[in-house]
Image 1 (cartoon, rainbow, N blue to C red):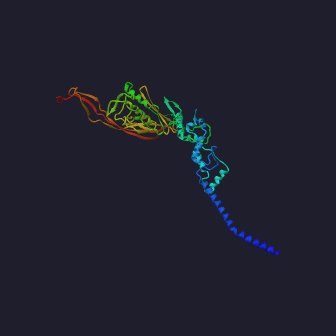
Image 2: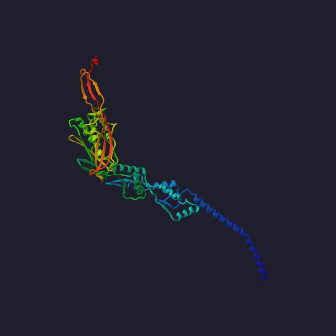
Image 3: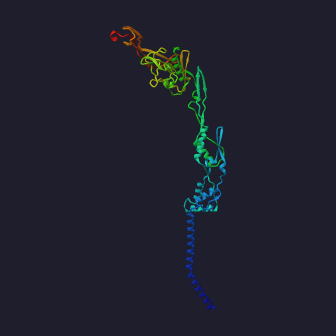
Length: 471
């Protein structure tokens, strides 16, 4: 028994010794196996990360695009697109009208290009761990992408431009007319236009987000240059003046009436300037003027538009009495029969003008007319808070006597015979003042308006030839 157990003990020792010798090879095997597994996983992950196709389990519009290249996915989507919606439309609404816009007119369609870009970007942002995490997430749960809709902005813009042109409403100025003190006002009418840029933004919001409501187009109100509020207070007579003319001088009367018609009902806004020369236009027969006497080089001669200076002189005095600012004015070279010296105004087309500015702070209106043998010009405006009364005074400060006689030889006259063409007339220097008074007659201030010179005229005669001259 003892020997047997000793023998068994020896056998066991030998078996353990042999087993211990094989142990390092086993560990090496398992180590290599683990290394191969890790390497395999690493290579697989690298393969996954370097794929140039869309990762699996991604859908666009319900179509599986996983495992496809971008071009392949795009082609597949276009092959399966449902184009029945192109016969549908949406409504653009403007005041009192609606426009039906078909989707086919603006190339309305799903934006598959961006949808495919988005699908391809899944699992391709961040570090390796973040990418793999996103890929695993998609593998566990499918990702469905609904593409946004897109359209041809250029075509939509052209449609809006057409609607804007068709529906554009021109604003209408307020109109005011005054006849014999009766004021008539036609209120202004606002215009409107479709703002293309703002409407594109509004439409884009509807189309991109597929909201199929009626699109109310944005319209912007346009106020006219002259609104009702700018003229409704023109009810007060700021100033009025009149001069008389000879009704028998038909061409001159015609020119006076023509000039009145060209400035009658002329509206001047606050700060606006008036030019008599521009208001009257070309002094031609085509523009309504006739030939009558005008002053040229201190002589009365025939000229188109003779008589219009009387209208200019009449409105000049109305301007002074209205307290308006005179910008340009020149007196005639000779005194006139229809108005006292210092209160006349001459004009010559393109050379001499009468201009004034509306400095009242509110719009004014010129009423010019003829009645019987009178030219009457009235300026209407807003009633001032503090009323005043204006008086115009003139003062002759110098009388200029003519020197010598102007002789014209006339062969039809006998020697020594003379005929007087014109008697000598003196010239004058005149000062003009404007007195501003309150309604009780108390003087507030006095302004020197102008200092005018009127030239003397020599005696003018025709004489016959002397004996020596006849030879």
